[in-house]
Amino acid sequence: MEILGIDIGGSGIKGALVNMETGEMTTERFRIPTPKSRKPKAMAKVVAEIVAHFNYKGPIGCGFPTVIKNGVCKTPGNLHKKWKGVKVDELFSEATGLPVTVVNDADAATHASMKFGVGKDKDGFVVMITIGTGLGSGAFLDGKLIPNMELGQLPYKKYDKIELWAAASAKERENLSYKKWGKRFNVFLEYIELIVSPDLIILGGGTSKDWDSFKEYITIETPVIPATLQNNAGIIGAAAACKL
Image 1 (cartoon, rainbow, N blue to C red):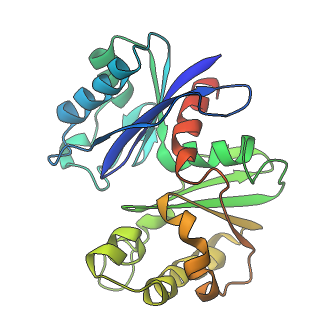
Image 2 (spheres, helix red, strand yellow):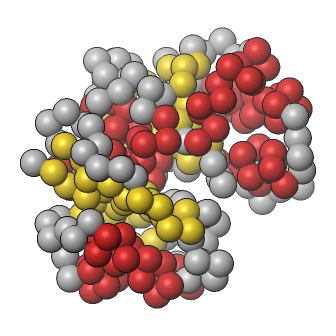
């Protein structure tokens, strides 16, 4: 069975069809830039455009870059403030005319890594960090998802949330070298290690593909490994969300 997975990010919205038996994408990824306004109706229109691109008629799984509870956006995150309180699954269903399941994007990526990727058959407490516009995080304990563990929202010094200081967007905004940024990111991982004491940390998101450029600056005791699915994990996990 193939399901359309859509991964919504602060800079781009992308989708592909995914084989639910193997976890492999059966089409090329199709991406549309996130509307500058980042408002609900504008982003719902892009989701509909992605569905139309694939001429798709089945259920849709969608990863969303903020806390989602029972389909409702609880915090706007890096999106427009109008997202707070929106029933995201209903909004996207109305825009596409199809059933939509919406989950936190980091939870989706973590689910993909645990079912199809480097986290497969890993027991204990596994935390995945997705490095992008923000710092998403997902967690599995003995094979079961702990939803909406938004560790990137922790306050840090003058910053309302540490992701403003340590995400990939901060690296780009401040033109940081991998050494300077890597040391910042390591501080974030130190907090994770202190607060939740995971057995393993998996790194996903677009920056995970550059692991060799910053791994020497990661000095925590917890094992840290890059996700094998890398930037496709969000799409694959979003599709798999329909099966959760």
